[in-house]
Image 1: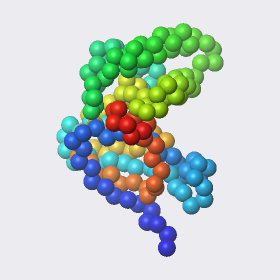
Image 2 (image 1 turned 60 degrees about the vertical axis):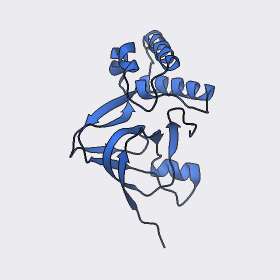
Image 3 (image 1 turned 90 degrees about the vertical axis):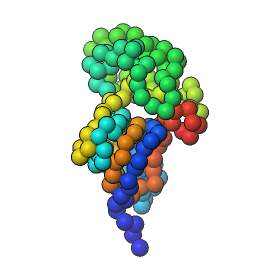
Image 4 (image 1 turned 180 degrees about the horizontal axis):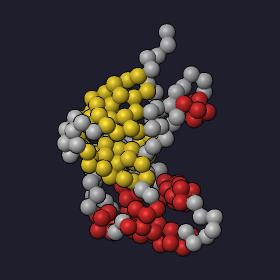
Length: 178
């Protein structure tokens, strides 16, 4: 018979989970074929001080991010000197390109990440400097639409989601599981 449309998980993250993204229904069918579905999910926060990364920072937030901010970002491994160097380069290139009348921040960010990912497909791209870090309180509900980059850093969360086997792990803290 047909698959159940929902899956419900309880996540107790004592260690950072990978950065991942799921397709929406249309993209899932395009990539995998008929009968495949994307994945929307949400989190119900079950304990205070749970931490997640969700979505990419806005242009203004990227510009406001300082090197010291990056060094302090949480995750399974410390932020590397290479990641800091890449972020500084990103901001310098951003400053040059944003003056163009046809500048599109989303396209610029996508191209930068794709270029970096292609340099080293073994460990991926450390996305922490580019994503929104959110500290949550018990009782918060967070919507995670399909096609949204996200990672759980720590905490206990209930995760209702669409049933789907399609997950793209983008960065996994150099654990070799991209």
